[in-house]
Amino acid sequence: MNDITSSLLSRFGTRLKQNELLSKHTNFRIGGPARWYLEAKTEADVMDAWKIAHENSVPVFVLGGGSNTLAPDEGYPGLVIQIAMRDISIDGQDVVADAGALSVAVARQTGKAGLSGMEWAISLPGTIGGAVRGNAGCFGGETKDRLVSARVLREGKVVEMSKKDLDFHYRHSSIKGTNDIVLSAKFHLEKGDADELQKKMEEILGKRKASQPMSAGSAGCMFKNCELAAGSSKLAAMIEKKIPLPNNCPLPAARCQLPAGWLIDQAGLKGLRIGDAQISDVHGNFVVNLGKATAEDVMAVVHKAKETVKEKFGIELEEEVQLIAQG
Image 1 (cartoon, one colour):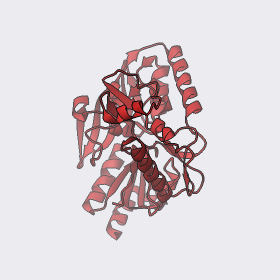
Image 2: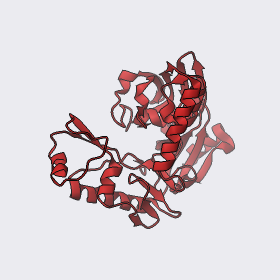
Image 3: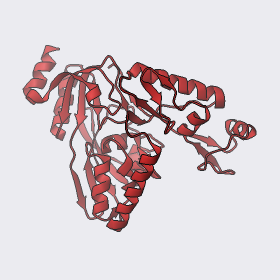
Image 4: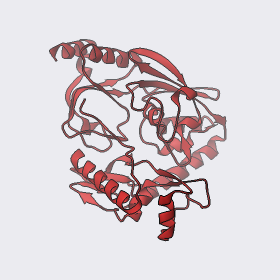
């Protein structure tokens, strides 16, 4: 362990932090110490840090803006690299954003430039790298909609991946669950009116503030929404029980997407509290930290929500928030 510490200190100096609390770097405000922590400000930082860790057989976790992530109470025994390259360049209708660029910043800058296609991201916490990795989306938009390509670090080499290569699906891409590290992404947008785009973004922000908890620590939506075929026995059971379906699930339709928050609400779980972790009484798909929540508290709430929804509707909720493994 002294070898990797010496190598990291030699390359990064005082920028390297040891035993850094992850609670300081996640929106949940939860997490024990990372053995080594580095804020990477350039692609060279990312590549060199990865190489040093790889040569010393030390696990690496890549952190973006801190949303959509739950860090364990015990911390992380390896190197946490927080991506902090934040450049955004606009050339005509093409936009290239570094992986550490905040999604909100991309929305604002492109909107100001009169480019349409990313305004939905004004309400998206986190970074472009995380958005690409998980095909993040909200308010009718998804990362895949305007993405052209992404540059990723794969086993020490930079690879350019097309939209087809990334094989996007709902909250998924081909690199999710791999060790690939997103370095930057390219988007092609449409021409629009800057004033109208600004108005649209303000409307989206207003909807977010009205429908989501804003004051307490949270990772964002805890679970993925559930998509069912119109002929699904689970959907038929809801109709038979005369459970009023949400507006975005009109029947007859080939498929019906049931919001996880709606399922949790229907299961009577809003306000459920274990320790200092609670299912928000504002939005059922948010688990909030009331002040001193632990990862154990959060996972206990998650387990109870999954168990209850499965018992009531026969539906298995799938986590959207990523739990940092122990390495």
